[in-house]
Figure 1 (cartoon, rainbow, N blue to C red):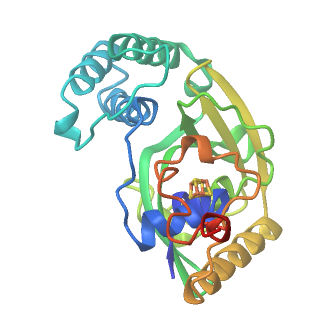
Figure 2: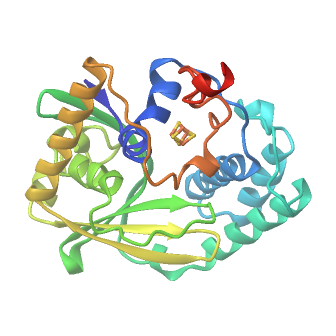
Length: 268
Ligand code: SF4
């Protein structure tokens, strides 16, 4: 099957949500402003990296697209309580300015930003985009960075499978063949350790996602094997904890496809 880190994450959060989003392709109720501000922030960071760390240009880009969302094919249907369009824009600009000042970006060798990859994973294909990759020869490390702009701060990242997917991709020769300027670099980095960092833009903090090795990549393969088996058999268990339901665009329709368990009471 064709998998991606974001699809694996959605499946892990709630397989039923995966069904609504990717199998039935239901549009969902809303585009939350927090999700949209994250997309615009990512775009502004890309401009920042492409144009020599020009923070003024990045800020202008962010403000422009935040007010012309249709040009990025985005829209906002709802704002969380106690937020406003202008307030979120100002907050995103602050995040960008803090990002500009953060020292971890200054060292090492920047391999690339927004790197699109497609690599084999056993019988599957794994496709995705990595926000940022650094080579750190002094530490013998390839560092994979993922940006997050939401409120939630992760509790445990060591076994986070989205990060495992990114780090696995960098362990493949096909990945390096797809990075401009690094097409011949697979051999150079073959013995580097892979480490992940989760950059939480909202409070300008890095969270260590830890190292990954072959045992993690085997678990990733097992996860995608099992995803494929579930999809083939049309089995999509919904999240038991319910932790992601509050953010789910399909919360209003979830469950409406089955009859109410209280139907027998209504008939009395
Ligand atoms: S409302 Fe909750 S259980 Fe239903 S699809 Fe969304 S996340 Fe899954």
